[in-house]
Length: 342
Length: 250
Image: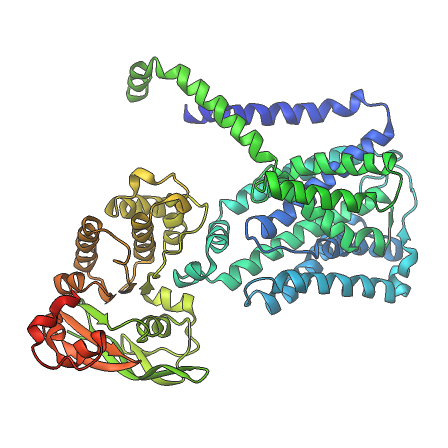
């Protein structure tokens, strides 16, 4: 009874409608370009959710997101080009690598408070990009790597058009939502919330802040590399500039911040706002640096007017709907109480 | 009764300042011990040393027969049963009051038991009415209670209360004192760090007075208030004559 009631909440209805909408959306879209933009939106939604695990729920801002995307992307491409191994087999390798690198960064910085972690992630990300360019025997250096079309093959993630990727990323978004939800409702999630609230207090109350932060960062990095691997297969071309740059890390952070940090749906909303905006700015403003101006402007505006993110506007709206619904119900309160008792 | 905590010759320097020097005292199991002294005498530093925030230069801390060393991190000490509150309460920001306590109970229990335990604690601290409020929106006295509630959620054996009366009006103070007594009755040993003498006199059986980082006096709170050295430390100057008159400090 209560479960059925939960499913009738406006939140779930909206979720269901949104899912069905996105499921049938491609059938109405002719243009391949629009499809690629939508795929990009969903990819960044996943990146944003991964960032949110440590940056939002833990308030430990990471600017090394791109490195983990690159780890996923390059493991996928190197193993596919050199050894012709399916991405589905190289993804676990990428997960392991990003886990190890996250541990490395976290181990050195999570004992410290304040900006050290954020600074270390920037340093790591830049060094990692350098490494990708230096070992050009394996990574083709700054020239980048590409994979060629080898017929419709799901296991190789090679398709004649981009539409299959649309559904792949739709599934990824749903998985990421579920993972995020499970994470925040786990013990680690609760502890991370305490650390965000007050790290000193959390520690004196028995929470091992170092371990909790490290775990969250590892999860975030793993999610990032999985999404990175699929994203690379979708792009078919990767280079240190496109997948490992500071620019990409910033964009991932902005997606989550504009949408709403530490909220489940914030990064999704953020991605569907930021990605189209950047596509538009590329067309309208024409310059390559236009997106940088946009990031700056958006950040300033967001911090000034809605630091909690745009999603909170929607949440407030849901609350209002709920209130109106409950208000209507209040008239017959005695009856409903009797019903529940019996 | 056995000793809950034995502190011996504790010293710590911050640069050239000796915040605590050769300070020794102990706490019996189950008692409420007051640690008093004028501002800046090292009370909070002592609490920090016991809870593991800072490491002493010399001296030992023995808790339930075990020496606490650098290896015992702050979190480990909490898990061993040493709890503390802060002078300024530190609620977990926008987390709800319920989640503030629930997150901590989760450390010792599964989700289902933790929920029951949380409700129990919230009721004990009369926070159940505001359990859905973000903790940052609580007024000061409720924040202090929330701090205590969270400490109780760690199921401590020793709680150090750092000035939990500061900033409360007489009514709130009375309620708070009742609460402290109730916590003590559940078998928790309490180290009560306080300025408000009336509070100390009404709940504590024994008082240790600190001055300038070191031990000054030990006895019942009443005798402490009458002791000439203690009065001099608090008021300054040579107040050696009639101790009865100088009780104004309360």
